[in-house]
Length: 96
Length: 334
Ligand SMILES: [Fe+2]
Ligand SMILES: [Fe+2]
Image (cartoon, rainbow over all chains, first blue to last red; front, top):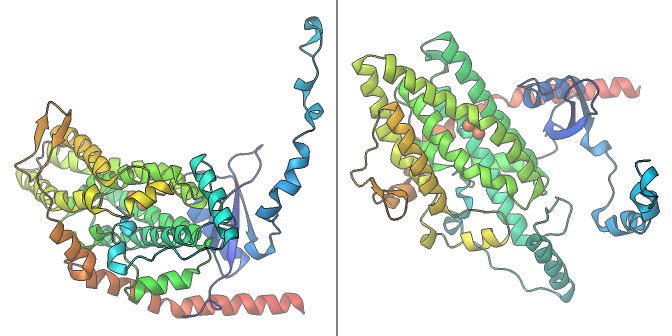
């Protein structure tokens, strides 16, 4: 039993209906792009959950390292002035 | 149910936590804090080795259960009584295949391969739910499985939607959304036979219910006081509700449904308990459970042989598809 003859892994993204963005919904193994699309349709849209499907080879995705989470995302924590609620305006114009 | 992995651990010999370095102890502490805070753990996050192993065992066995679970009902696809029932059964069995796939994918994020998991199933190293080692003798078995087996599965699976391991929880959310149709179509099929059927059909339904009742109660695993790994599972947020609590919930719900259907369960000790507000039920034959888990159920050999045959007979297709894809890649590169 070897894994080198395993079909490659693909990530599946589905757009549920026009106007919404594609959302990651799972993965599957398939030999080639055409098969991956077909299987994504069979596995992830059996109840009209989709109007469009993307498949991407999993090994083509570049992801941030979980251990870098603080370094990457903490700097935004103290920038409260980026939110509208930071600014206290007079009541008469506060709906701005 | 599909999640008997932790309960059957003693069969496979559980492992003791290894000695830890100071750094590991710190990571462990941070992990425990996250679990206590109700946070989700993602596949790439640090996790204790035993947490990883336990999840791998549970998720892969859950996946195997979905796949092997296609066999008992698949037995009736070509013999469904009407085209409508055939289409429904096909859709249900196809769903189970999808459930297996979602779960295999979740297990793969923990660093195992699909081939490794399938090898463990085919060599008999990995288990699957004991319920699928019982035969489907009549058409009423298909309805009884939908109503009772999928019903028990739902009871068991809903709490796992809140499992601390996020890829498993996400797969379970998707699965639970699809399960409800499984139970309802089964009940509906039995209801038609009970209300509009002949005397013989009603007797067939009752006979099927009689055979599935006890194995369904066993699906929830051994009683809480004989389920030593449950405590750890609860601590890790893998198990959320105890075996006996889930079993009781299932019995209470099934009693009411049985009354509407017009069938009884084969247990003379079933009695409404005014004090507890629950149905009391009789003693479960756990020796049967362990016999089936240990490989001596009515269909263990047949089920495994069917899976191995499917895998071996599909080998040339898998190879050909891969060869075709590689040839295409070469052409692209040229
Ligand atoms: Fe399922
Ligand atoms: Fe199901």
